[in-house]
Length: 420
Image (cartoon, rainbow, N blue to C red; front, top):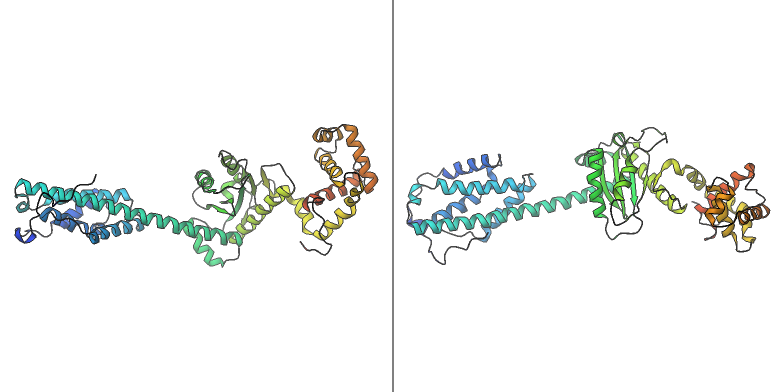
């Protein structure tokens, strides 16, 4: 609560008209006591404040703007030194009590009107000084947060690119609790639709991830409208070898938490394998990013995409020239069918996804079994490959997967000399 300034009802007594203070060390005693009361906060943050209190108590004077600005700077310094704002306020309030209690007797023997005016002046100094200290502390805190976020974002970008100088990366990662000599893995979370901001999702996820996997060797950030989670492989249960039996618990944890949110659900999460070293993070990120791309292109319905689920697609996509040749040679004849290649290709996709069971494929396509078997026969006559023949099935299935990777027949096949 603000206190009205002194002066309208009382004319402060000039300092020269007062008896001198007999003990100039009394402010030092006040500072030491206030420091003890505030849990050991340094007395250096009282610089500029104690003289204001003493002047208000002795002369009834009001603080000048420059003096309040100096107190605001003390609040900034306290924030930069890691002093909580509550401790700083305790220091200031304790100092105010100490100043009033320690005033030399010659000052406190003035008439009651003068003492009341001095008390009002002290209260006003406390009110303005505490507010200025808290403002300065908050300003510095916001700047520190912005600076840390900038450093975090730059670190994450460099870690995911994997092209920064190793020693510099190690030094920059240390304040964030990352030990780049150990194995980490990366998870990427993609909302079902583009969100104007995913900061809320990041904040909610960060609390859960830190609680689940520890507050070290964990980073949660955003990149290109994706949520990025970097975690220690040991904490997530991911193997640090090249085995693909499991990717650990990171993907499940991230997916479960994000799907609790109203916006962005359902989320899709892709998880890279764990790799050691600073550049292992970039490698795991590339695997996770490729997972999201492949899952979208192949219309996968799994919400959590793991590297082991994509190996066959990676093999097919690695040689695009051979893949184009496969699709063109095996499936291009389907264009001769009435209605084009689309319906027959859709039938093949469903047939393979249903384990080559015509009745199951018919139910998925909402067709009769007779219609499905007719289409399969038509595919055999046009391509020369029989979907029911195990010797032909692998070639047809590989060609179907290649068509999905190339988004054929919706888009024309790349030219034969096009490189991946």
